[in-house]
Image (cartoon, rainbow, N blue to C red; front, side, top):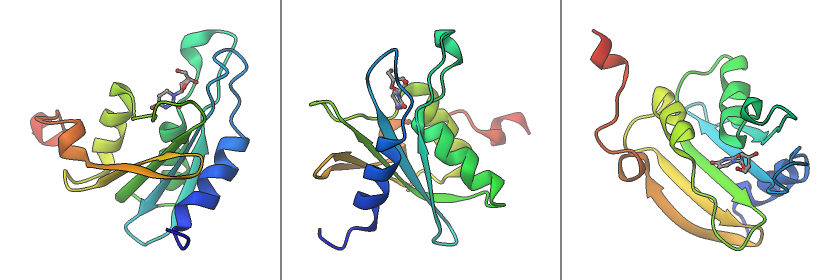
Length: 131
Ligand code: THU
């Protein structure tokens, strides 16, 4: 696991989280189809619902770099419990991922769990439903 490229990036992302209201810092990294890695962190707001999740922040960075397909998402939080993507983030991931995409959950020191997107968001609503 020493050569896991996500660990250092997740720790760096986590350290930049802006979470003064929840004190729950989250870092996320998405691997796009090109192989490039994009980082994000949660960015809270005094108007609480305006806060942004780490996964959404990383996905926005990927899209702004011109990529539209992600193959892996890695998430790290400081708390004891693993931070699994919230419902809204699962939907945001699904917009740019196939059901086989992997969601990797980290504690600050190691990879703890891996799920497919299909496991976390079965029977999802996608663009195909609009056609
Ligand atoms: N949060 C994330 O960044 N990602 C998740 O998947 C779950 C929750 C953030 C939102 C908020 O800033 C803090 O964690 C507490 O909910």
